[in-house]
Image (cartoon, rainbow, N blue to C red; front, side, top):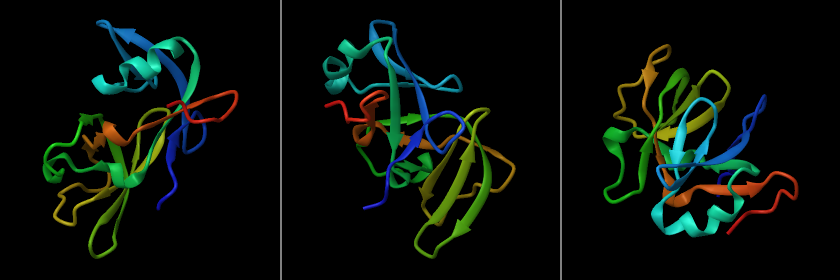
Amino acid sequence: MAPIRQVEIDVEVVSLDQVDRDGKVSVDTGDFLVPIPDDKQGIYRPHLGKEIVFGMRPEDIEDPQYCAPGIQETCVEARVTVTELMGNEVVVYLETDNHEFLGRFDPRTAVSVGQMATPAFNMANMHIFDKETELVIR
């Protein structure tokens, strides 16, 4: 199984606060906001305002045009910096103002280096860690 690419400042990861928006818990990375799925709201609500580490594996970041049906999809905007055709997938390096992360896209993707893309995060497979203890919050 691939390692989790976390979103943390100045690394391949980001640690940020969870915020309460419209009565729902979301992760605010400073560059984009990702809502926590409804079935996980109760788990993370006690951690509102705490510093956390938000993580996604590259296989859970994909081209929204080729997502599997029924995933809990949230799209963000990021710039494509590198693409690597690996045969059955394209590894896409993405960046926002403060974060860098990888996605594994379908080989039919039309994304190219330099363009803005809207990768889809499968939020059913997201991970949140306590920044201090580095333990997963479940």
